[in-house]
Amino acid sequence: MALAYALLALARDDAQGEIAPITKYEPELVALDREAVRIAYRDQIQHLFQVWMKDEHGQPQRAQVGARQARKAYVDVMNALEERERRAKELGR
Image (tube, rainbow, N blue to C red):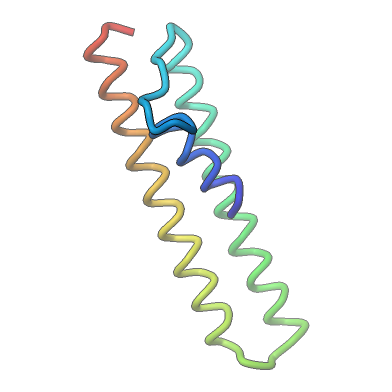
């Protein structure tokens, strides 16, 4: 999940709150970011299920909370990547 939030930060703004520059590599970078987010999401859901199988304490509520957080991160990052892709198209990149 940390990867998702790191990608969200990169897709939206830099550390100073400024919009990160759009480069000629944007289409490829956005595609790679999307792939990484999909993999991270899948891995997180698998992890939650593996923990559930090993430790039933507090389940399924713990898994539900983790899945909800993973979904939110996924949606937030994908929305930010869509916006970044839109800006790149506006700039003709």
